[in-house]
Amino acid sequence: MAPLITHIYTADPSAHVFNGKLYIYPSHDRETDIQFNDNGDQYDMVDYHVFSLDTLHPSPGVVTDHGAVLRMEDIPWVSKQLWAPDAAYKDGKYYLYFPARDKEGIFRIGVAEGPSPHGPFVPDANAIPGSYSIDPACFVDDDNQAYLYFGGLWGGQLQCYAGNTETYNPSLQGPHERTGDQPSQGPRVAVLSSDMHSFASPPVELPILDPETNAPIAADDHDRRFFEAAWLHKARGRYYLSYSTGDTHFLCYATSSSPLGPFVYGGRILEPVLGWTTHHSIVEFEGRTYLFYHDCELSKGVDHLRSVKVKEIFYDDEGRILTTTAD
Ligand code: FUB
Image 1 (tube, rainbow, N blue to C red):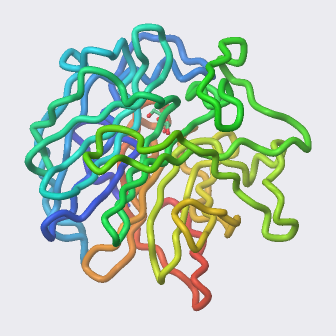
Image 2: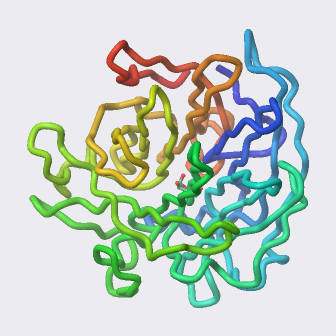
């Protein structure tokens, strides 16, 4: 499959259906002269574009670029690195959630509000109180309650927070994480307030449980442990939490009967793509289930210059997602 967007580099696609149209909220990658490192400093993005399409079947229709809907210079609390965003709709308004480093260099999550799926989005003056780390994904359940899932290891700083505390430990900055038989760190989830601008209660950790032992997946199990890119979707009455395994480059998923877990590991969705990062979303559109993801084919393998792609995926009769490959 060719990249969906070729006039700029885009990554971390969060796809949603609003008013019958498919909208994509990606990161906007750009070239810089920043040295590559395991902290992800080379991912130095400064704005967000929104894209839309009328159809994906039998092939993707024309992709409209709605332009830069939010710029770093318009967000008072941010110092750098506008990383993977997501969007949500609730009660007549649209919300863009995004991670960025604050003036102290600590990743926080911000929210911006707009009247349409493509903005314009006006950011709150401060990051969401109590937010930390990266990769927000907002899920609004059938009862209209919204949840924010987030977290990412290494450059995403999740390892700097132990369990359910918000206390930042700077000595763990960089490519560090738990090791051995210790429980791996799970993503966080926060119940959002009814106005979508704050956490109704402090975030809690969502351990990913091994289906055999019912214990959290071990820190050394890099083929299955959570690294970043949490995404929540609901299908067949179950909640699917999907995520990237980071340094082993898989997209995996876990399932639960509740948006607040417990989530039990289910399997692998996508084999490694060209490029270090892998980050995705899953959405139903026109009666089919699609995986949006990115790879570095267009940039010929430059890790921080990525391009969004889309592929139909399938479940088996038991609701397991069938593993696929990038193409
Ligand atoms: O795009 C910057 C970061 O790379 C994202 O936040 C991560 O999920 C990874 O894709």
